[in-house]
Image (cartoon, rainbow, N blue to C red; front, top):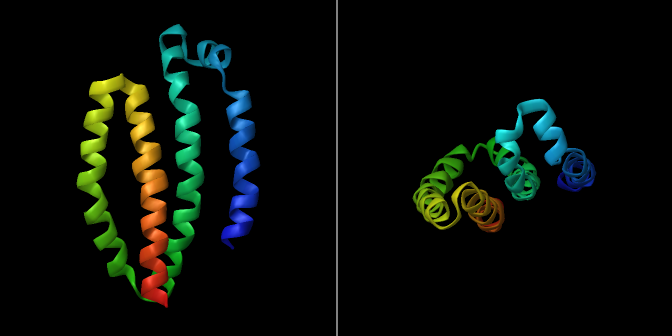
Length: 121
């Protein structure tokens, strides 16, 4: 199931990235929102990893291991919060977008796979 979701998700996110640019954002939301466009590619990468994580979360829930989700979230929350603060201080909204991608996207996904594989054998 993860392969199918990844196979379908990647082209959709790529298409969204190609469609949403400065001109579209300016036309829909106004010129003051154009600086937010620099964050979109980072958040799309995060969204792709989140798509994979949802499969793991649902698999653990189906196996009756919902407590693992709470433990993982409690462990990653302080790290994520700290990374958001550092990202905001270093690069504003772009820094937060990068922090979201690396901490909640890449690091969280790798950790989730490690935890899920250990829990499910």
